[in-house]
Length: 191
Length: 175
Image (spheres, rainbow over the protein chains, first blue to last red):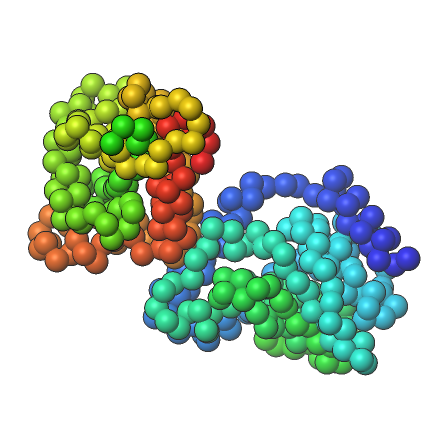
């Protein structure tokens, strides 16, 4: 089954081909970036979300190369397989987590990732200004990463968080929707 | 009051510049806040006096015994943040076990787990990127009012302090 195969690849890559860094370094670095963005944009959280997404996008378009090289996988046959690769290989490889995939839409074009653990958000408490809890998506960089990475393999997707434990929700859920498959001849998107 | 056991009456967190960061009272609302605020202030001189003799050890042990019931214990991190625990020797319920720990008094080691847990909670607070330790350092020219605004507001930290204060009892080895 595709799902167990993806899990096996993820484990294998994580164990043998990935350089590890201290988790706290990652968490604190990312936290500082977000806190600094909040300060720089005077707590305009919508803009912070946009900036995080943009940074993620720029990471994603580079990261995909590394991902493909290390995982040694070929093109996915369908979007379901893509979801498996993202959750079980991609996230495993870079963050050592495997968020479960749920809530497939009927047309197989939308799914959710549930983040039971999120290394980016360890120790974090959102600012208590009455707005951050409703407006800031702390881990929004992940949406950009997925969007950027998939765009490089001809999949245009839209990704956004729908809930976050930091906001007091029960789960952290990211919704990913396939918009279209990009033809090879398309001019590059100048984001 | 024979048979009553010691319990934590107050936990205070004091910043490097002797600015109060957080004070929790146990049981909440039952103790006079001002009096404990004075008690905490009174122990700052003891910290100061003992500071030259400190070793790598962060535990300051017993700072002073206030009266027959209250005793204050201190702990200073290497960055100068001070934790103070006031123990009420008769604050707890009668222990269900046969032995009576109140009769033998407290050893300094009894409070170590509580201080360690406090320090862990404080580290957790500092790791929150939205917590800015600088905003808690009081500038010398600021007036008294700035003390109020420099309190720790993190709910996670406050509830952890609360948990430590309520769970600790003599002989507890980990919190």
